[in-house]
Length: 330
Image (cartoon, rainbow, N blue to C red; front, side, top):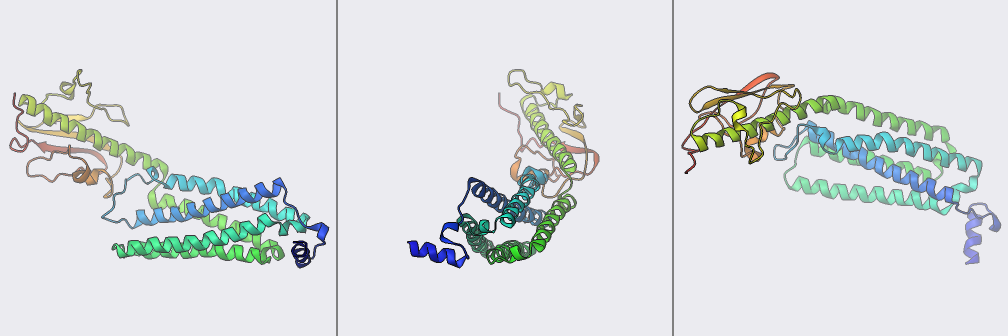
């Protein structure tokens, strides 16, 4: 055992009594730096995947028209907070090594670097298996090819960076290390800003959420109108007639303005529901997939069942078919 320690010290040009010892500061600096790094890398990959999913939607998959309701907001927040923390911690580590070169030979540094290389390799293998599985399932698209490219570039660059660190390259070229760090930070910043052009700003997403809620409210009102007709064989004269104190139902109001929705009787069994929308409906929105997820949608006879809409005041005409929705037996 003593021979091994002596050989180790000779390898690093250290005397037997000069073997570097790990301190609590070393442990928490490396632990924090690696945790911030891994989370940042995975968040960056996930963010790019989310952009690809949004830019190249799969018609067989469901997506909300509000991209921020998924993981994009979490991924952006993770990068904004954790990557600067990683840069700060790695800067402190490099300063400690410049002050005391023996800090470059502590065991936790070697373990952290080898662990990073191992995780990078496992991530490439695991993601490739997943992507190939999707390929066999028919996901033969541009999105598939771009995801493969993202995995190889991001994880491959991480692997090469820390392989160079293990060999002492960045110690000999500290200026280049700082340049690489800031360049990656700029790339992350560009990816976050680019997301606003791909999926829109959070303020635009909020307007889409308002529109989706309006469509959901109109679907709910439509259901109540049809049920009212089935029960009484007449349409309600106004939305106030739908109020049911026993069931606790009251017709919802526009969540954006607080005003009641427009309801107009246009025939014996025909009516219109109107609302003012902020933007044109998205083809991948909940409102577009009404047939699959909203059985409460009742179309006018001879009309297509959909809730697509443009910007501004839009009315949805409906006519109740008594053969499809016969009066309720008393």
